Image (cartoon, rainbow, N blue to C red):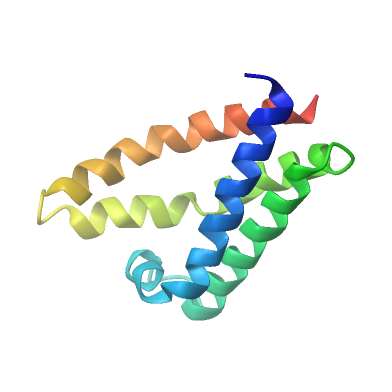
Length: 118
């Protein structure tokens, strides 16, 4: 699959994930680290950021900056992914193991998106 196609697919996925922040904010509130201020605002801000990043990845002209912003976003939301592991630790159900698997996947996503910067 060509880089352009991969970037477009990634952009669409990011846009959909961003929209989901507005449709299901309660889910994201559950994984928001308690030490962060204004959790609802941060959920909407991160959703908006995902929509912007995804949109920038769709065009060849804005793809490079979109990739760098997406990398920054993936790093910024990593604490929420760690919090999800801690939240699900007691249950040790499917969501717990999915949250653990998501942590290294985040680094894979960073590498994936980094390829769009060239």
